[in-house]
Image 1 (spheres, rainbow, N blue to C red):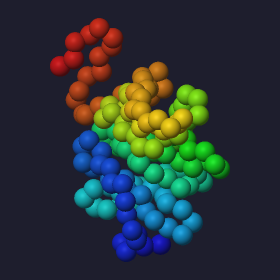
Image 2 (cartoon, rainbow, N blue to C red; image 1 turned 90 degrees about the vertical axis):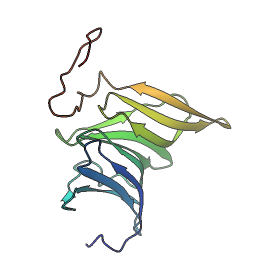
Image 3 (cartoon, rainbow, N blue to C red; image 1 turned 60 degrees about the horizontal axis):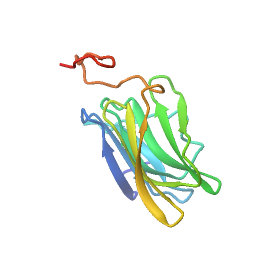
Image 4 (cartoon, one colour; image 1 turned 120 degrees about the vertical axis):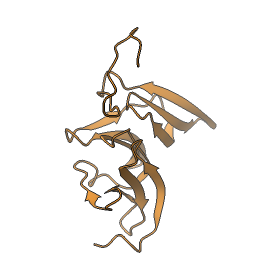
Length: 150
């Protein structure tokens, strides 16, 4: 299927500018499309094809992690696909809160999620450091707690 003439929404670019994620409007539901830049080559997603529609994609620095909101029956869930391992991580949300938008930190260690529920809206930060390895620019050392970075 060609992707050139379809509606594309919600662009997200990896920190290094090499991976572009967009949500593509299709009859069967909105789906995320990943493309290498500048070639435009389509990059595979192993775990997300069966879970649609997609919204609010966000990428880590090198594009290793793709976070987005998926619809699972009547509920929306936040998921993160690790493109290096093929694993799909589901982020449990507190209470009856519904995710609306999200933003993944470039290193993949935190995520900010706009949540709605009970007539209120809020933004909540989640620590992903126990779940994900850092996705850092080439040559940047990983520092542990209490260590100084470069």
